[in-house]
Each structure stands twice: as C-alpha cells, then as structure tokens.
Image (cartoon, rainbow, N blue to C red):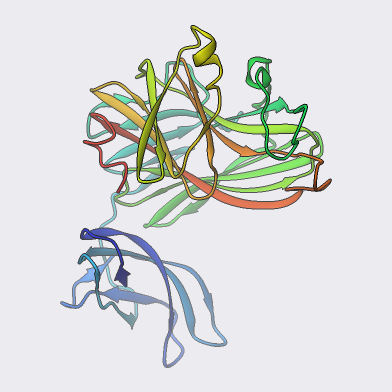
Length: 320
C-alpha cells in the first residue's frame, strides 16, 4: 500500500488479492505479522480473488507498507456498530430517519458536539429552477438560489445494507420527476467522517441539484479551498457585493463554523458550493440544454464526505 503524500497516514483502503488456492475466507497481516481489521467486500471463487477493505496503519510519508493476505479468519476488534438506522463508531454517531432518509444527527463524540442544527434534515436534496439567460452550461444567474426549491424529503426506502466490521451503510432510495436517487450513507471503523456515495439516474431539464446541511455552529464567513490556498466568502446577504457571491467555485472542500466547532464538506469531483446563514451546500448536478442538449443526463456516480470537527479547519486538518 503506497502513500504518495507528505505525511504518515492510517486509513481504510480497498485492495484485491488473488490466493494461490481455494479458501473460504482470508485475513490481512501487516509487515510485523499483526492482524489488521479487514472485510471481504466481494469474492470470485473461480479465480480465488478477494476484494477487501483493509485498515492500513501508519503508512510512512512518501513510502509504503507491505500487507500479507493469508487464508482463514483471524479475530480483530472493531469500534463499529449498527442499531436500527444509527451508525456509530468511537468518533461519530450518524442517525438516519427511517422515513425521510434525512441525516438527523451527526454527533462528534471527540468534542461532544452535535454538528447539525436542531431539527435539521442533513443531506437534504434541493432542486432549483435553473434557466440562465446566456451560456446555459456555464452560468448560474443571480436569483436562482433565492427561489424556494423543491425539497426531496420523501424516501422510497431506507435500509441497512452493510453491517460489516469495517463498514456500515444505509441505502436511501428516492425518485423525483424523471430521476432516481440512490445514496449510501457510510461510516467506517475508526473514521472521523461519514461518506455519502451517490448513484443518480438524472433526467431533468434546467434543474440545479444541491445537497444542503443546516449547521449548529456558524460564522459570518465560510471558507473554501481554491488552487494553492483558501478564500472566504460571506454567509450574509446584506449588500449587492455579498449578493453577487451567491455561488462559490471551489476545489475539494468548504468549511463553516466558529472557532470552537465546524463542519467540512469534502468532495472528489464537484466544484460549486454556497454558504448562507447556517446552511452549507454542495452543487451536485445541473441540466443545461446548450451547447449539449443532453449534458449530464444519465447515470452519475460520485461521493462526498461529512467531517464535523472541533476548532477551525486548520486545527482540524481538513486539508489532510
């Protein structure tokens, strides 16, 4: 397992291992022969190949750790548990409403703080009418986010789909107009962030889709990652300058909170955010008709992570 970054790291990785002969189950050992937590995600009996989730620990900066996969199941401890539609480990508790699919609790155990505002629907999907006057695929016009959105708070199903020792997952399925939404809310053993994995069959026209999080800790400014640094944008709309900054182009994360507590919304492939009041939102999808009349229609697969933390984003090492 290679670590290309400039600091030592621990965390869960997926690996594939082909065994020399048939075996029912496998375990993973580190270079010192210690058992590492692992979970078989899938296996191919025809080729004796296992797809594994492994807790790789203390992988050195700009270096690697050698892991060995051996036959048989060896015992290890896990801090992960599932109770109803509550996912919990030593760092986080994530509660999902079994009727709506909303995240109703995102509790940071390390600082003893509930990240979401009281009564909030976390990870709420909001759909806005999106009809730019010019440059359909590029522009979001002023006023787009001022109109009341359609809120996708009805779920077709909410069910636990993974109770494994390394990863627990709740799948929320919805439909709205011509589109279908499947979101898996995941929590892994030892992790201080929850992940939302999205598979969306998108068939809308002139609709902008956001994921919204109403937060308990807020500030007059939210922070956004940009190339080689960060930028702050107001969460108020008190004058024309602030109103003009309604959508923020950003890279991998945005953060909102005060000096004591905060929340980072981390993504892998989406580059539009907005922060207003205590709301932090990520733009997930649009549906322009020019220059491509079918832009973004069809299957979409992407994920984003929810990282509640103590202190500000620097102290919480959101960049890492």
